[in-house]
Image 1 (cartoon, rainbow, N blue to C red):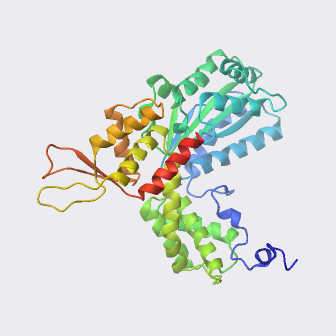
Image 2 (cartoon, rainbow, N blue to C red):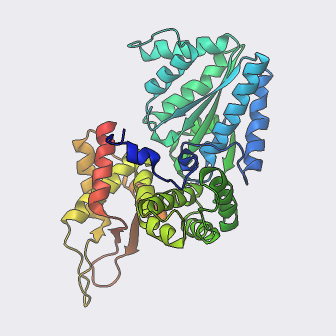
Image 3 (spheres, rainbow, N blue to C red):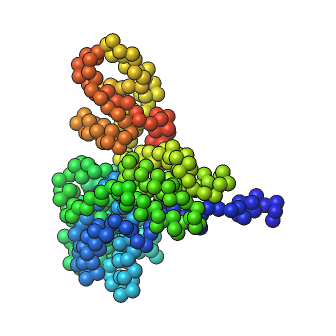
Length: 401
């Protein structure tokens, strides 16, 4: 066994007692500082346990504020209770990054509803009717659409599912939409908006004290005793609070810091490891954020990235040339060319300006008015991250779609 490739790694000393507990896939049994949101959601969904349709919910807030964790936690509790009591109610979680069309989502649902049957190749109308057939048997189904803004035909999907309830005497379909994009609702058709957003919950960012408590609890179960120094927890929580109030960032900082400690054979996670992990984590978070953007917004960002790789810069009167700065108009023109090339529907210049504002809010770009030295008044745009990495990430997303 000493010659085996994995023997050394298997017996190597580690700082973790269970590394999986520091990954984004883990949902802890207790979610501190989200008691209010858990209460609102569980009180509403308890109607399903009484054979009544619950209100649709829309949950939104920045990445890492607990939207998915809270929803999955509540669904797990509801499913366990319903199974125990033999009730016809269940929650179904769908990540719209993997299932991003009405047909894919409906197909995913009927696989859950009828696991013994095969519906491969059936029409969209047949699949939709099967969803309704399941509800007509008295089933109350809670359908969670995480990253709902990734669904290409979201208006058609939401309208179909919510109006489907009009045909039901028994059973019901309750929708929970989750989005990181605070302005996503503004793009919905008025009919869709009124049917989906019966109730809304905004998840605020965590502050430094809350993040510290979250990290303290997580390190107790994920790391070996006395490995993580208190100052490292303080630093990770302060950095995450300063950037975004994102619990996922704070946890990822300690995870990568732990990996670095192992790599350097120090077996202590200190401020030094957290600071060293910061650059890598920032890149991971940014690339993940880009992956979660709606397709049209990705195309706008791709246009900026491609032009940034070509652009020499903008020269203002009496000032030195500033590199990689783009005119808003040329970005829109390049976006239109790119969208036509990919056979995508073009967005209007009004929505283009909205997308630019949101990309700036996410910290992916910086904008300023042109000012002196440039004829007319226009918006200047500059990327806030490596253009080639952004381009590669978006092209990978587009190929996978």
